[in-house]
Length: 609
View 1 (cartoon, rainbow, N blue to C red):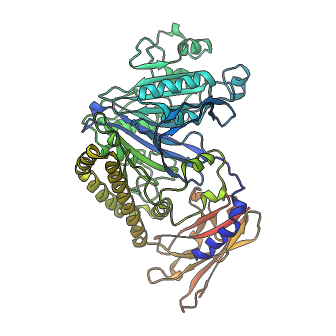
View 2 (spheres, rainbow, N blue to C red):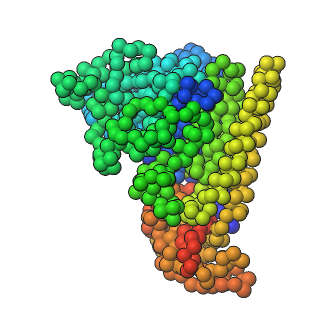
View 3 (cartoon, one colour):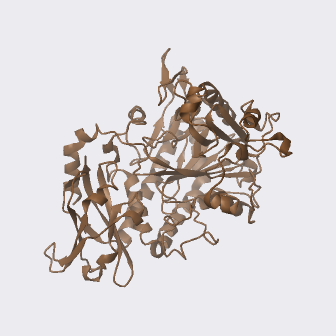
């Protein structure tokens, strides 16, 4: 079935390339920062879940050092410009095309930059700030992180670079927390729309968990070692009526600048993700209001941060799955590893090691509960096979204008294999997640056990020949990425799935009528045993509760093998409302057998404008 759809995509590729799509819906993120004196091996740890809604791809790039011509400028998404520097540093780049606030960078100096959404805040609208001059030349958004990656040698310098850009242009998003770290220190930088910001250094022996709200509390403007902030950060809050010094309370940045808490955060007195993160780190049950940082009960390792990023509140009153009888990603609790988690990483940052080893980015290609953390070394000179999408210059041109064909399902990309795996698991979570996680636990434990040996050999090679050492790290990173990809394919082959066939070659988004979908009987699943009333069809990036139920069903031998298959029809208009962008898409079918066992399968369809 795949070849016919692939042919259809090829025929319309020249049209699709002209169709620009809307940016991804930002669904927040979670970050964990652990100081070097709080970790097992003395490295500084940055854990991050990148969460974005909609149909997402995340190309990976290695960008080398670059020389720039005199007069060259960087053009921001809203039209402003700033001069480019003569030389920019090399970096690894994880991209979310179409997004201004999602990309992850680690540069050749071992400086990491990532972020979490922290809106809404009390600050005025973009238009109001432009009118009064607090956003100039359109303001700045995306390029804060990229410029930090291109120019910063240290985390502190990265914060200072970002602060100067905000002071000059003004920040365009309602509120966001940037996390900038190196082997010596980590910083939490809170930006407010306009020209106000506050940054706090993470204490070396403590850890910080940032969900999607500001976590900086008291700000000491006299403590230049641990705080970098707008000089009028307190005076401005007083002027706006957000802080009253006569109250007798110290100035609290989060309280002053955040919009009032709502929903569960208001009811509980804390964000539940920050709460569970601090609970896992300290071994104690926190009570609100939660502090900026906590001291871990024990030294923290890479595995500990992985476990936090995989968490669904298991073992707490906030676990709504009833023992994984349902997927933890679609309950009414916003969990750390959630439906929109597209990538997860735990980056080890080290000082006093060769440059090629300053960072090891353990990263997943999908939700971390169903995808392994694979170590990518800073010293690689090319991203692993199957993770490369285009040259960095091409990727850069797609940052704000991605075309629909970029989102085509593509078997040559590891991304789609891991997406398939997580979607298969999600429909039958309780019965298969143990098998998947055992596979990845074994994979990760082996990689962790070999780390010292690999780095010893890399040091030996780097001391003799930089190129040889980097080639070794590139080959090693690639070998583990290929192994993980192959194991994911094998898991997909082992897990229970039904064979789904959609006869249509292509469907236009303007169509009406119905779509035929066949479930082909197999030795493992007879179509006669399927309950048609439970079947729903939709794209995996939409909540399954919004998928379309079958309009009709009939038993029929579709493939002529003598066994009855199940032929279904689905109304097209409600299905097509779920599709965006129009591209070569994996459509998923969920349901259950008459005995109540969950079933899942998918086929591929070209959706055309």
